[in-house]
Amino acid sequence: MSAISSFEVIYLVKLRRIELPLPTQEWLREALAPSGIESLSITAEIAAASAELPEYHKDPADRIIIATALAYNAKLASVDGLFPLYSELAGRLLS
Image 1 (cartoon, rainbow, N blue to C red):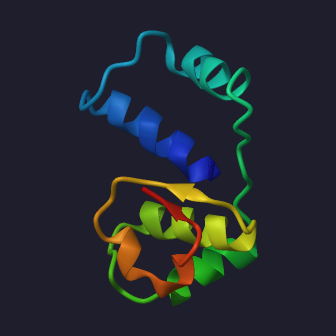
Image 2 (image 1 turned 45 degrees about the vertical axis):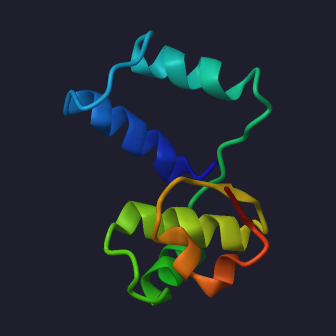
């Protein structure tokens, strides 16, 4: 999971658009540890790659998520309807 996903979840809680059953930091620990999902760091190269992606998606966080998956050669699970437009994600996008 791209580290930016943690930001997105916690920011949505702050905006009161979603609710979590636990305090945010506790929820984050509980969501990652037992699931085997690891948080993938955002590097300068990932940030640059996200800026170079085609302009299908205007949300910088989503572009960072895509660039993170590409940099780590990771599978990407998303319900975002714009992600399939990125040919770079061919074979990596889980539906």
